[in-house]
Amino acid sequence: MTRPFDTPPELASANLDLVICGFPGKSACHGGLGWSTVALLRHGERIALVDAGNFGMRKLILEQLGQRGLKPAQVTDLLLTHSHYDHSVNWTLFRDARIVVGAVELAWALDEPWGETPVPELYVRALNDWPTCEKVADGAEVFPGMTAHLAPGHTPGCLVFHWRTPTRDIIFTGDAAKNRAELVSGDTDMTYNAAISRASIEMIKERWRARPGTVVIPGHDLPMVLVDGKPQYLGKRKAAIRAWFGDNMTTLTELDLAATGTG
Image 1 (tube, rainbow, N blue to C red):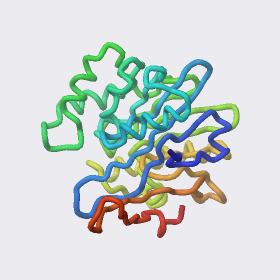
Image 2 (image 1 turned 90 degrees about the vertical axis):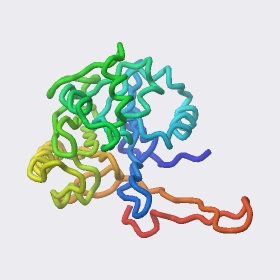
Image 3 (image 1 turned 45 degrees about the vertical axis):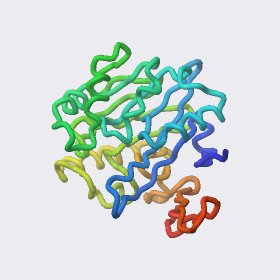
Image 4 (image 1 turned 120 degrees about the vertical axis):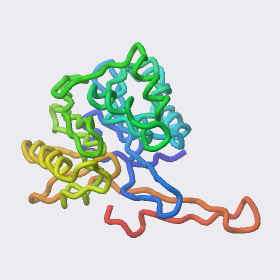
């Protein structure tokens, strides 16, 4: 099995590997798409994932970890940017790990009405009581060299993770800034308050500009660096759907969703 994303050297040199690279799109006819980023980090004997993907990614995540010689039980830390299903629901794959989630986020998610939102109700309820769940506040160190920062807007308790490595800084924005369009425009697609989201994006930009070469990894897009003050993609987007439009199971039509993109 090939890798769904070829991690560029700028990230590999920082001991970071994108297991799955998010896609900046929405389903037009079938509800949410939820193709989010899952990142693998290494520091000494510790192995972390930033976010855990959705149900449809389970087999892919297991296969991709296997390609890297890893099993879920070897993941020591799972860092969740927020509680929505496409980022959090697979925490049960990594139940032996230390599972980090924002204290504000989890408290909010537990009060969300059942059956009406992208919050996986029973999964966050179980996570709240899980013995390895660590509920963190703004500014907490969640991994060696990495701090968590409250970035509300998409949800009240979204976290941005800022990792300072010897080679470069890396900022995981989760869905506080889901894609390049949100980072450039300051506008957001899913927010409970546009002004609060815009302030969170400005905070991300300030951190991005502070050290040359800093990489931003959004929740649903390719990683990016600033070149002459403008976001430039790192790596090549891969996204496609295979469909059975014919009369047998061997004839597949592949729809390349990356063909018209700039990545």
